[in-house]
Image (cartoon, rainbow, N blue to C red; front, side, top):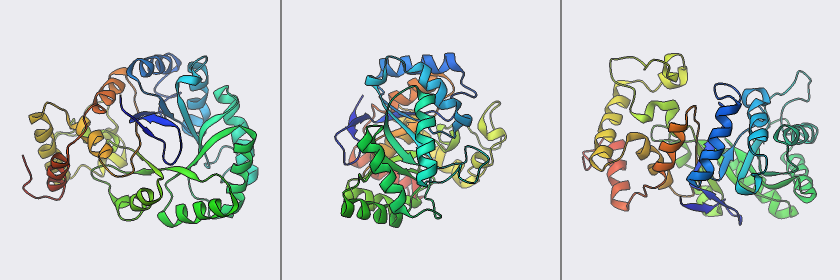
Length: 316
C-alpha cells in the first residue's frame, strides 16, 4: 500500500481509504469489526465518517471496532448536517461545532479526532467564527487537523487566507464529488489545492457503483444494486456513459485490471489527490479497492484514458 501526505501536514495516509456511510446501517457491528481488521491486514489506515451517517450509528460502530487500534489509523469525521430538532442543531457555528465534537467523541469512544471536517460551507455563520472555534479544538488536543467538504475554491481560499492571517490551523484537505464522469472540480478546486498543497479527497469514486462496469446497457440495474432505486446512479445510465464504460472496461481488461480498479487508479493519478475513499458493504469490496491502490498509471496510460473520456480514439 502506498502512503501520501495528508495535504500540507506531516500525517501520511493510505491512498485507498474507507468510506463508512453504510456502517451502522447495511453494515452491522460484526461487519464493521471485520472491515477494520481487514483494513489493518491490507495496510489501509484512513477511515472517513461523519456524525450524520446513519444518524450517528456509523461513528458508534467505529467506536467499538477501533478499541485498542486508534494508533493504527487516521480517523476523519465531519460536522454540519442537522443532528436534532433545535434551531442550532445544524451548521458550523461555534454552538453546533462544540456540541458536535463532544457527541462525536462520545460515539467514537476517543479523546481526539485526527481530521475534523466541515461537511459543508455554512452561509449563515461567519467563517471566522468557524475557524476560531476549530483553533480552540486543535489547541485543546481534541482535534489534530481540520478539513472541509464540498467547498468551492473561493471558499477554501477565503478560509485559509484568514487562517494564515490569524495563525489559526488551515484546512489541510477538502473532499469533493469527483470521478471519471463528474469533473467539475478540475476547473478551480483542484488547481487551488495543487497550488496551495491542500490534499484533495474524492468521494463517490465509483459513481455509486456505475463505474465498476457491472451495469450493462439495456439490461437494467443488477438485483440488489443501488441503481435499482438511486436517482443518483440512474442519472449516469445513459447511452453515452455506457459507451464510455464499455471502452474503459475493455482498456483496463487488456492490461489485467478491472473497471473499478481503473476508476481508482485514474483518480490517484490526478493532481493533489492524497487518498480515495470508497464505501463498502462486503469485505470483497474492501479487498478490491485495496488492489486498485497498487496500480499506478503511467503518464502514457493517463493520456490514453483521458482521450477515451474525451470521446477520442485513444489507445484501445
